[in-house]
Image (cartoon, rainbow, N blue to C red; front, side, top):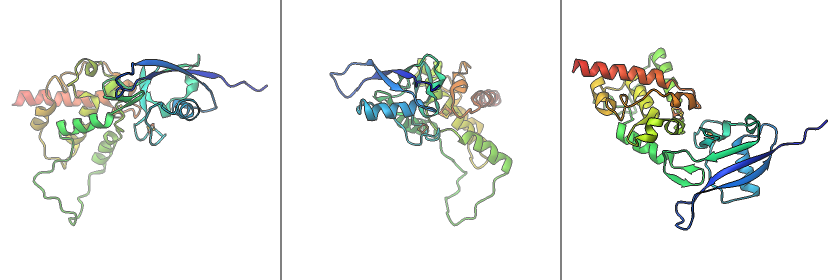
Length: 246
Ligand code: SF4
Ligand code: FES
């Protein structure tokens, strides 16, 4: 017996903030489910066959670029890694990630947020007064340190942890898990000359490690399974120790 494919009902947030006449609304669409269909594939099909004006982002379709993050049935996640088959009743509600500037419909400006975060937290390697010289022979890195750095470098800047964080939603100035993970990455890097005291001036406050309420939304939702709580706890202990020894 051949199974008839299901119809998936999508309720999608639509709003163009550039159009003064437009008002936020939910619009319903229906798509025939195909084997292995992801929410991303369904959205593409929708845009191609029903509504070319639907805005959402993607680049890689493989969970690597972080562009397709959105809220799917109340949970921030990547559309290209979410199967429609996961939703037994066939009803899927899509909202844009909260906490970011809305470009339109499901598209938000995570790039602006990440750039501002990088400038605010100085998220670049700061070696000790060494002039950059491309002719100098590279210094080998201890493989164990490289492996730890690699683990933290896996962040795809999707913004899911920011949207899943209740503290960030209540206090816009909170740096969020992505900011703290990136600080943890530079704190770990032996090539970076910044001291614990330098990092304390950046995240040793209520907008940084001492503002985290340990609700674990970031760790639960991160599509790359990064160890947020372990790193935030490590930084918090380090920053607390910095106050004591100051
Ligand atoms: S830490 Fe995880 S959830 Fe947060 S931006 Fe990076 S990959 Fe996305
Ligand atoms: S399209 Fe790149 S992560 Fe989904």
